[in-house]
Length: 271
Image (cartoon, rainbow, N blue to C red):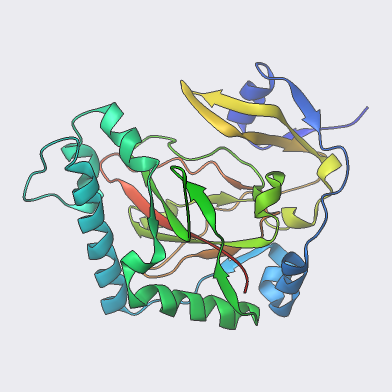
C-alpha cells in the first residue's frame, strides 16, 4: 500500500470531497527549468529570494499599484480620498467589486522603469535573457503582470499546486513580489525541493477544487509519497520569491486580521 502524507488538515479534508489521482508520468523538465541550475539555491530548493529593490523604488512601485487599484475600483464604487493599499478591505463596498478587481491584470509598461530593474535582476540571477510570457486576458493578447489581493483571514489565493500542470507555464519562471501585508512571514507557502518530484509521486484533485465556497480552476496538490517540509519564507521590504514552475506552492492564507496583502506576479520565459 502506498503511504500518502497530506500537506495539511485542509488537504486531508479536500481528499474526502474530490476525485483524486496521481500524476500519470513525469512532467517534461523544460530547458528553462533545467537552467535554474545556473543558480545553486534555485537548483537545490526550486526557489530563492529575489534581490532587494531599493527603498525608494519599492515605495514608488507600491504607490503606483495603489493608484492603479484606485482607478480600477472607482469604476464600480466611490473611493475615499484616504484610501490606503494595506487597508483595501475596509474601503471595499462589496464582494462582487473585489472579484472584478482581483481578476484583473496590467501591462508591464504601467509600472514604468521598475519593471526593467526587476527583469534585469532576474536575468542576472538566472544567467538568461528573459521576456514576459504573453497571455490572453479578457480577449486581448498582451504582456501582462498579474496581481493578487488577499483580504485579512481569507484564502483568496490558489491552493497548493504546480504551475507546470498547465502546459503553457512549463517554460516560465515565476517571480512573486509582495507590496504590503507580508510581514512576519505572512507570504506564500512553498514545499522546498518538490520541483524535483515525479508527477506520479503527487496526489492531486482531478479537476479544480472548491474551498470555503470559492472555486479554483487549478488542480490542488494535497499530498505526496515523499518526505517534505512546508516553508513560509520571511521577506524584507522590496524582496520577493523566484521559483520553478514545477515547485509546489500556494495556500497563501492571509493570517493578518486587519491588513490586506497585495502582491505582483511576473511570468518570465526565455527571450
